[in-house]
Length: 184
Image (cartoon, rainbow, N blue to C red; front, side, top):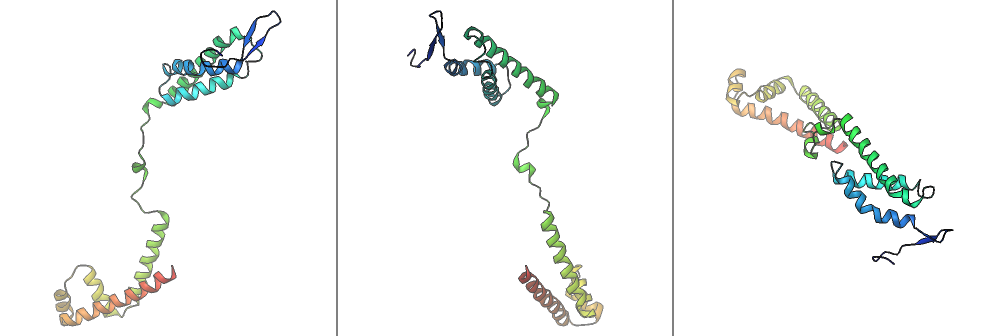
C-alpha cells in the first residue's frame, strides 16, 4: 500500500513490477481534471472531458506499455478539449443567450384553452341570438356601453322595463352556461 492507495502490481518476466492500469486511471483523474479545467470553459465541460478521456484510454491500457500511458492519456485529453473548442466555435456558443424558464412560458392561452374559449363564445352567441328580438337588442346595446336611461329613451320604455329585459337575457345566459359547464 502506497500513500493510502492499494497499488496492484504484476511481475514482469525481467523481475520488474508493472503498475495496475485501473490504479493509474484513478490516480490520474484529479490531475487530468485540473489540466482540462484550464482548457475548457466550464467545470461541467472539464468533468465530461475527463470522463471521456478516461473511457477512451481504456481501449489502450492493455496494449500500451505503462510508460506510454500518461502521455497517451494527456494526448487524448488535449484532442477532446480541442474538439470541444472547435464545436463551441462552430456553434457560436459564446453568442448563445440563456433563457430562463419564466421567459419560455407564454402568456397566450394554450390551443386547448383557445378552443374552449371559442366554444364558450359560440354558445354565448347562440344564446343571445335565441333571445326575443327586443330583449336581444336591448342587451346588446347595454353590452356596447349604453346606460339604462339612454336605452329607455331610445325605445320609449321605463328604466325598470330595460332592467327586466337585461335580467331576462342574463338569466338565459346563466342557464345556458350552467348547462354547458355540466357537459364538460
